Image (cartoon, rainbow, N blue to C red):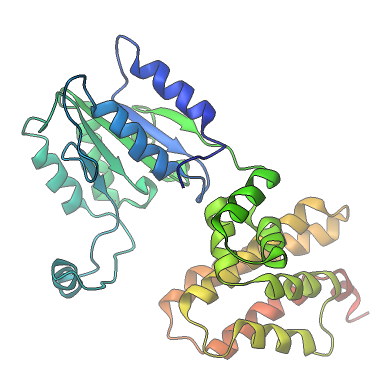
Length: 321
């Protein structure tokens, strides 16, 4: 996906700076996940390093360095080196930043400029952030940093102060629908559910469609709206998630539940119901953070999701009275 309808302002800002006398050396590309920030970073980096008269490669560019999640451990690193599937770490580590910095002691390969892309920069370890800060304070000539971030507040204030921020807006529902239909993913029901839950993120909407979460969205909405005094909807939800669901489907379900709960909280006119929805959303966020760390029972986890959602229903306020 290269034609992102929410990138127009970002391109104007980038190209205006690129054509100016002095290009800022540090850029933060900020916005929620799924807005195409990495696509922008790669395309912008290519414009940056391209110089008149110098042929540019079609594939990987020697003067564009990308830092992202590496292998989880030595065993996974060996699998990666052998071209096999491997498990990634959950953060960008200091040794990755230091390896990149050693590369900066040499000249760019093709021209006079080099681009360093870090994605997502908000998942750098503290030591990695501190190491990067040194390069931002004294950037080598011709080196430019593009930090892709979903949560810029997690970056060190000293990093934010040394970078120019470009913000990426969410995608309108009409544009989101067009992008999903163009991708050929899912039927109308799945697309409708994805758009309602994705909150303007194409990446999130695509994940929801690929997981076929249309039925799940209806069950989640029903739990939040009407509750589940007879436990039947929770059982339906558990079956819809599937008893042997993998982590990706569980993660997508939790993300969908959070999105629908947040949407309900913003739209309700009842202060007491809003408070219950916010409490449920907080509990879902905590559960989503804990779930990957535990050897959980899928059935119990899906029932816990259903219980949290049904507790947010207005009817539950009167359950004991």
